[in-house]
Amino acid sequence: MQNSYLKQQLRERTRALCLGISDADRTVAQAAIAQQLGLLPAYQAASSILAYVGCKRLGEIETGPLLQSVLESGKLLALPRVKGLASAGQLSLHRVEQLISLEINKWGIFEPPVMAAAMTLTQIDLIILPGTAFDRNGNRLGAGGGFYDRLLMGEHHPTTVALAFDFQLVEAVPKLEHDVAIDFIITESQTIDCRK
Image 1: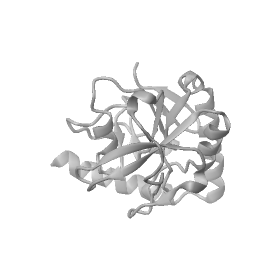
Image 2: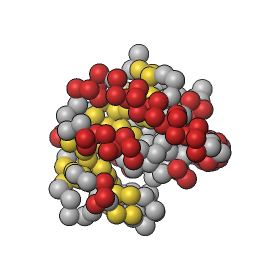
Image 3: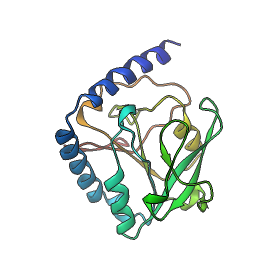
Image 4: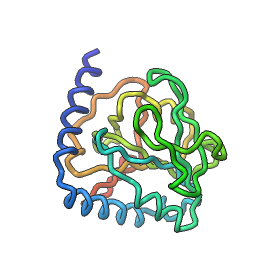
């Protein structure tokens, strides 16, 4: 219970910082993050990528230009759709060939149309995850629904990368038993290998 309260406090604090960034500073930082991602060997080697459409109000990196560059690079792009309620829902994965085809769900987040070709996690080489706060051990604070933790619960999953502003790195993210650590964090100034 204490960890849940601490998580919510950290989530609110980090989102407030995200909303306080000027559009100019946000654009510069996000371009630097995308550039660092492009240099990551796991990204370069991936032929299929599961990503997300970033939501500014949730304290996430906005990913529109990055998603477009994935498509233009010839890599296969998958995006998630939310199935079920936030507390126990799942993510279904769907191939996206054009960003213009995306729809807005009931939470105001863009996702693939329901008829988009379904994919499985075994078809994905690299996952780019959203989040509001991270620590150097790969602990991630998401929006609170646990969707990505449920997606990654199996014994094996593809390499995972989180995108973040420098200020979203904190000393320690409160961790619950079901939380899944990530492999890399990329900010505007550094790439952190959390597996070390």
